[in-house]
Length: 478
Image 1: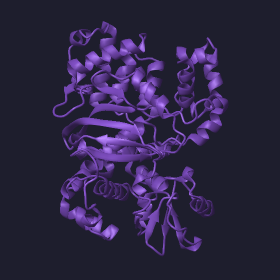
Image 2: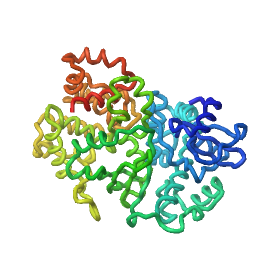
Image 3: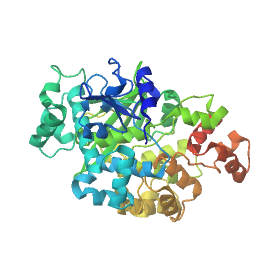
Image 4: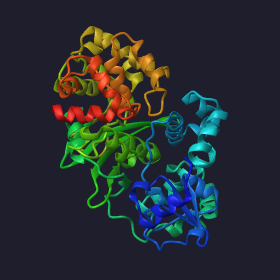
């Protein structure tokens, strides 16, 4: 993203929250870089350098501000293809792909050459993929040292470092202080072992509407909504093993952020957990351009988000199982699926969430008769099994940033998956902001149309944010 230094300085001078996370400012006199919302004294214009990412600021020799904490800045969502490739690569970096196969493996996973991936990263973030990953690991470590009581060794490993020595050396060199100097004198006020984070967003945010959407579709035993909090189980692959635990997400009081609690079982995969929660709650959304494009449609519920997911296969299974039945009936079947084939969680787990949703490989390995035993028709059980095999084998990747057209075509090649199902999966699992479900009955009813073709023609005015139009239309129909 090209930066206009004069516009950036005006945003910095006014603490304009619309630009939080869109750029960072390095101050030559202090050697520190800040968010545009930092409450420190405004530096002189000639002492400011502006960067598109925290990684670029650190590559320029600046260290993060301890007051505004750049690691807490909201992320970005984009409809641009290059930006989506970059975001897909970022998520894979969080999951450790770069550690095992380098840039070549990372590029292969998102379907581009390593040379093109380097160009994308330079354009989006101003640094190479390796430099970006290094900064993200350090910023996460800084966050864990500040906000949790994890031992320094555990912080190093949870942040993606392979040795404490390497972590201490790089942290001290980059930030000019030892990790132990950043550690608070007393542990944060949290239950033993619980990791707590705040994830920022750009207001407004229709939190209650998003929570209601998730509550209506919560899978028994896997998800639960109570007292304004969303709880769920989660399993993430990490270095050849599978970490399983649970999380809780709530809205922060008096701040533009959500509060995330992570069970200690997931401490080794904190970067991936945070990335998935950001996608599930659409925290990268910038409501202003969306509202401008949607016009009157967005006025009744400002800040309405597109609900994403922490598990792409889970959303795909929901879309398949939920075909031609009610939301309540789909919940029942999904709960049975989780109870029958999901991994039970051990230890201190909230009573309402007991199982991790089954992995694709676990479903692919089951005979059709076992899938039918939970109440699925034979045709739908076969579709679910075929989908699970495609995802387990890597033929289909259900992650944000995956090629939308390629993924939808692959989904629709599976018997029993049509355009509505693939579009729903693209909207929630791939994070495609322009997904539109023109044949959806709720969309047609809210528009007062009976023709999918006419609904599609009307939707052209809402590009490239038609997924947000779908959620607004559903909220009117509810």
